[in-house]
Image (cartoon, rainbow, N blue to C red; front, side, top):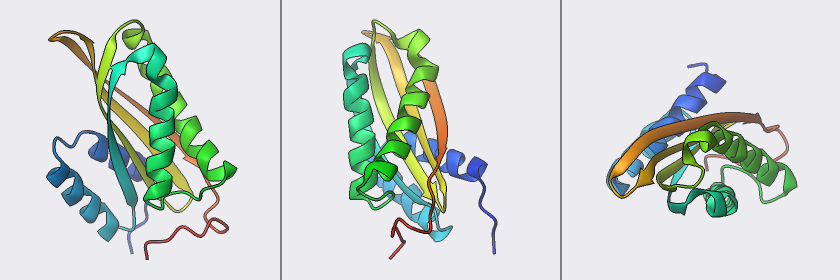
Length: 147
């Protein structure tokens, strides 16, 4: 049996974030599920600073809808905290500009990772940025399963 670490879960979140179509997103998601890693991705675009709250909310809602985390303050806090930390990593390049791309979220056991993969810029003068953060969520009490 394969041992899955936080690095593997981070890699899974990045894989979800960099998918370029719904079909490839589903293929990656199914491959990760085979390894007992739950994952989801959600698209996002808009002006960075006013959108930070919306990006975090989308990450939390997507994780809850797909059963990655429980719908309680512990699950919400883990995803929101990781999303915020990932956004902080790209903030220096994104402030005052538009962003567009995907948020990838992955979970295995107690490991929850959020990756943001965005193009940042104006018109077609874009920079590519990625942020990744990890949180620990106790797996014994949340009821989230692969079933």
